[in-house]
Length: 266
Image 1 (cartoon, rainbow, N blue to C red):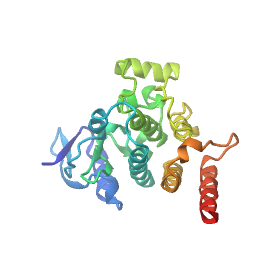
Image 2 (tube, rainbow, N blue to C red; image 1 turned 180 degrees about the vertical axis):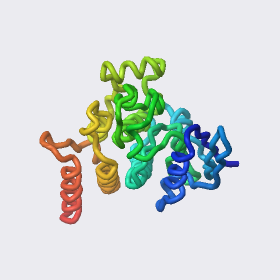
Image 3 (cartoon, rainbow, N blue to C red; image 1 turned 90 degrees about the vertical axis):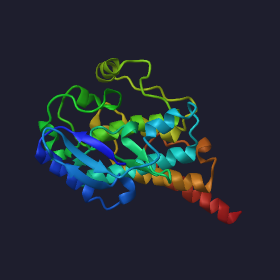
Image 4 (cartoon, one colour; image 1 turned 45 degrees about the horizontal axis):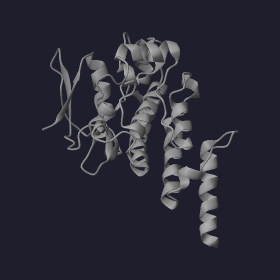
């Protein structure tokens, strides 16, 4: 059995999506392309079957706020690496959400469902609302010209899901969520126990200003540093605080070096 993504749109965009899926070098980051159907009016991409189902399904099976930090780190890094590659190829996903992230038997998260993906060079010509309101960047809700930073916004919402195991804006309808995000600058409430390092990154990702959002290159580097620090010291997130002046990644690396030096002297 395979997972089938239904694609409505022009054949030119579909071919671009085929290239985006089929040329992926880091296979662990994506659901692998198997076949395609281009018989109008329905276009289909067929990808590998992933037994773990969607990340959303997995999270809804957990108690709220119960996903352990090591899994939050692993899942978020898997997603960020997948999106890093996608953006390096000039492709926007535009519907990044937990339902479009699939789990393999090894608990590796893969980016899937390229139904409304497009080349970044074509993003300005998109018409109408595309994506899913609860995860959608405000500039997309307003149907403004958008860049790859819309995926970064969605990643911030997914990161929040990993920490809470809840549906974003669950107390609102999708339309109410869209109104609150675009006109009131609303965001999901971060849990009190959220590590400062995570909350700092999430707030940057879902900034209302796309230019203030980090790139996936930066996100991957940061999460790799977090992972290394956490593996060296499981209490890392309890004591770590970002500098008031600036570079979170630089502070994280400095903290790792200091902890490693302390271990060597012990």
